[in-house]
Length: 389
Image (tube, rainbow, N blue to C red; front, side, top):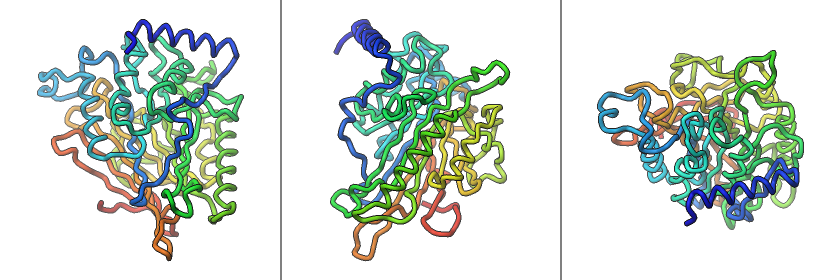
């Protein structure tokens, strides 16, 4: 394996090449070319959300907001890695999604080295994974564009810098993934579940608007066009389906609409801090409602909120913080969110379209406890409901 100095030199040369040709996106990495995600033979597709690792420099980076016992036992970034590895082994997801603040840029000495370590459990698992950026990732030695360019070169990732068809789109890390029907089934060439990943930015660049950034008009236009294309393909021959395949959206900074919920009126989970959304409402929630395909939005950013609440048919869900260097709450375990889509069985006994979407959370305790099992959406007129696994 090349040493870090050699790796950085190669990376610098790659960045120079990209800038010379004026690209704002990078090609899909070789490891992802031709790779198609599909529902398993059990009719399920499982996603693990990893929110707010805030990884810095490994063993030398101390934990924040933990019990005295944890602190005495030399709690560090390595605890984050150990928890993530345990969850991956227990859940065996089909896809791992990192929803930003993957590294804590202001404390990072070498962004490349920190990202390598932060994503190492996902890479080692050989499970496909993707990432978007938060508001802290770029605070070290690499810009947001440079971070995404590096991420797409890592093993087993399906991340993209930006969609090839969108030349004028804000941010870096806007792309979608299609989850096809079970192999050898009549729907194996159909996308039955659509995943949207967006760059929610870091801080406002508009002098008159303070606070966090937001999802811009160009990104909403790309989502709208992509959703319409996927709907057309869903309804095309052979084996046309009716309506629209359900979708899920992943990004870092919560929408202002998350403010509608507290611990009492959320479906599951708790609110323990204010929603750190942009002060400007860019209307993305309205765009999602108008299209109707996205059933749930998953974000990070506010580490000690982990609720889901439903508004106008869209579930707004926090991942809950996983990182030990990130701020947290002593006695409130770090956690990760799992989402599972289940398929219907048709009259012939083969797998059909999506029947339901469920979620739960895993805690970093002795038993990797499962909490807050919930049905987010069902392919029926009934509404979301809390249920046991």
